[in-house]
Length: 444
Image 1 (tube, rainbow, N blue to C red):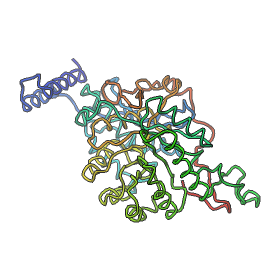
Image 2: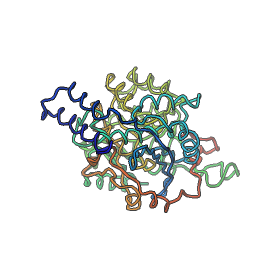
Image 3: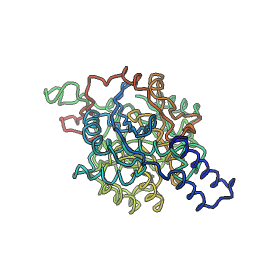
Image 4: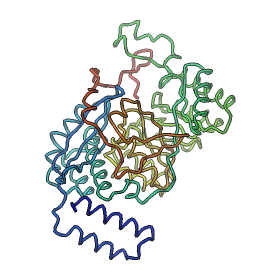
């Protein structure tokens, strides 16, 4: 029996003991594991590499960690859609030589030392690269234990992860029809947006284009049309679709903080489930003013990558949902610690889960959703057939709930030959500029 099958057998024995079908004590189980692994060399990392692919036209980066046991590897998400190439370089040129030869079992030790290996830290490129390594090591751990990751995190707190879907349109009738369609598909939580972020289509022809300032392709939005249009949207959807559906909205940091405070206050009669990202990370100080003036639940954190950005908001109970992008903060190891911190302050989770997260990353979101007590809501996702050709075992969404398969680890695998058929788009992926009428840049 090889190492992998031997440890799998021990893992099943531990699981059986936990379920009460074994009379052995914990000490006996631990002793059995020690005997089973005695004399076996540690499982070593032999290679770390980035795999870039774009089956849906979105730039995905997946990290593969190979080990000294033939055929045993793990996958992690390192997707940074706007800067995929620097992440791949960080993985291939820096994390690969750093991780080679290290014990694949020691996830926390590897994370802590990889985190400081660049000396300067908490940047999105290095955090995403680190996330790929971290999640891949968790995937390996699950495969060795022959258990899905949620079991390693303590087991299920719920049968599946409740999700919200995105609905919208350029006019009120389109938005209403979209919401009704979402409700018909079984979703109880729906995010509503009037056109793109900031409802730019409601703005008049911007003056900067007539003045020849910036590029003709730069888009524009004005504060007042967006604010009034958003209130009108909530009023229409509530009056036509009823109170049973939970409504969410993303301000996406598009307006000045004081305008965001006023907008959230005016939305209070429509009972939003949450309003997302009212302020940019640079404006975290405004959350105290917002909390003092309204009881609308607030979700924040999509752009966070530094612990200093979220710890105060959580400990002072200034937000209600933590909204971080798990690969952006450094991986599963960080996210589970954030979830624990949030639990003690009654802050719920709402992990960022858009299309520019790989199926491995979505699986990481869902496994953590299943295992934590303070889960709030999960952003839903739909995978194209091309994506499913590249990634097997993708999470599934049915009747508004996200499910994972019961395979060991994250349960998602990648076909590297299929992935190579979908190279990254020629466009490098930068966030396109949005401007006020006079040309002033708007932060996303």
